[in-house]
Length: 139
Image 1 (cartoon, rainbow, N blue to C red):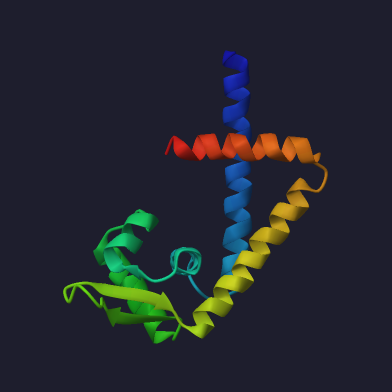
Image 2: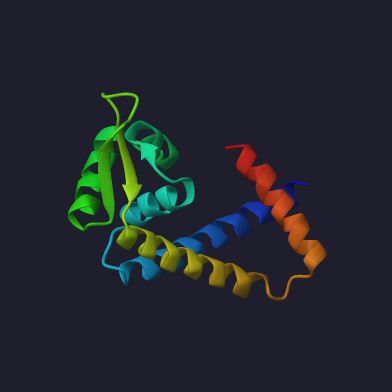
């Protein structure tokens, strides 16, 4: 059991390192930072969010997020609007250009997943998916 745990740790670490390296190289080509692309990914996936909600999803402070958002607003990728029901809150959403970047980046992820899983049998894909779902719930 301990050897399996050590092997799993090693494999997960190696996979994480490779995935991070891949994403860094892909993001570098866009001219945006990884943090900016992650912000775009969350908004592209979730839709318009309050700043506080977005910061929580990204695991950062609202102060850190404010800096990211300002750069993305200047790049015309995000717009800020007052919340319709809470005048203290600001809602951020992707512009059309931001949506385009989200879709392009998301397609790169889908292509990578397809390439990584092309030699995995469908029943093993389901097991892998189930394992990732369970591990993600632990966070």
